[in-house]
Structure formats: C-alpha cells, structure tokens
Length: 313
Image (cartoon, rainbow, N blue to C red):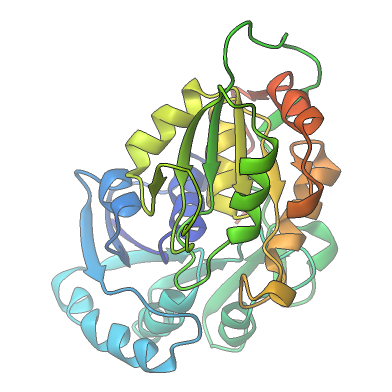
C-alpha cells in the first residue's frame, strides 16, 4: 500500500506530518509539497514531489500543480490520499478521487468558524471525504475526526523564571508576501535588553530595526531553538503553534490582521481563539504584548499525552 500525502508548506505540512502517528496509515508514502527550508528539513529521507510556491489565491498555480503531479498516478498505485490543504489539495485530490483512490481531506485546525475555500470546493467533489477538527462544525457532509491539539495539556505556573537572560524565539512563519512588522516593532519595545532572541522574520521589512533578522530558518534548527527557549512568540499560524506545543512550550500567539494587510483573511484569529479556549496559548494583539505576558508564557509548561486518540475516519 502506498499513501499520497499532500500539503502546502507552513502549517499545512506541519499538521499532516504531526498527524501521521494518529492516522493509522501503513506502507510506503509519497509527499507533494512546496520546496522550502522548512519542508526540506521536515521531510528529509522521504519520497517527495516538489512543486513551486503558490501565492495566495493563485489560480494559475492550481492548474500548473495539477499538471506537475499527473505523473505520480502513473508511477504509483495509491491506496489512500490525504491532505490538510490548501491549494495543493485542490490540484491533487480531485485527480486521486477520479482514479478511485480513497481520498480524504482534513480541514486545517485554523478553521474554527467554518471551512476554507479549498474545503468548500472539495466538499463538492465526488468521492472526496472531508473532515473537520471541530465538533461544532459537523454536518451531513463534514465529519469530525479529532483535533491535532487533543494530545496536549498546559500547567500554568509550573516553572520559575530563569535566573539568566530570557531565551526567546520570535517567529512570523513563511506567509508569502505578507509581513508582520507590528509584531516585530512591539517585541523590540518590550523585550529585556539582555534577552537572547532568534528572529525569524519571513518577508517582513525590517528596515530600521536592530535585530538579527532571518527570513527563513530550517525546521530542524527552528525546532532546536524552540526547545531551548523560555518563551515562544509567534504569529497565530498552526505550524508555529504546533511546533511550540510539541516542544512543551506555552506559546504567546499574535494573530495577523487583514486590517493591517498582514494576511488574506482572519483565520489566524480563529486558531488563536481555539487554542486560547483550550488553555494552550496566551493570545494577544500585537500592540498589547507586555513583559508580564512574556513572564507568564515562560512559567507555563505544556505536556503531551503518551497515547493521543487516533483520528476517527
């Protein structure tokens, strides 16, 4: 049996990779994703069909990626195809379903209020099964299979503040052409002068900021920095939040806002709300962050369940 795994880079591929132990899939696997520092590190040693980066709502890329992945169905006999989105799911999953492959789409955990555009389209494609990560979104078409965050619990006040400079990771992800200057400006204002900071800045314009900016950090290096950090401050992307939780960190999440042209929609507000309600993150707007918030995040730990529930197909 061979499984086809499809996901855009960023939080989509991070979710799918983290889901694997809970999906009950066996045999070989082939990935389709975007080549980026994150994905090349995360999927080292895996069979991968690399595609180029699609801009948000780049409809020509849908066709381009569909054509670029046709050969996979001639080379492999897939038993199952699974995707966590986004645009690559639209390019590949209909091809799989049309060939009789057991085809499944798991909507991103960012979608607390309702399905993404990709999810809405795929829900109408014959022989594609669609799943939500929130029970309140179940319907005749959408099934609930579980949440990627089911395996975590937080313990506030479990750790004392370190008697040394704070180690901080500030990460804004790899959200294409969308910068997040408001977050960086605020962190420069509130961080202690002696803090040791890794600044992962994406496409943000850092002109005039006295920071050691790194647009992209390989996922293995970023994971090591997060594991060693006292505080993780991140845009409210699922991949960034999940990486912090897996390292036992209680993230301070800051949603990007469309009013400031920081993203294409408000889904980061949805994931921040969901994690805040679970008690798994401290949520703040960019201009609200205080030193007290950093201390609270630093003194809260997150634990992983030893046996999180399997996804309910």
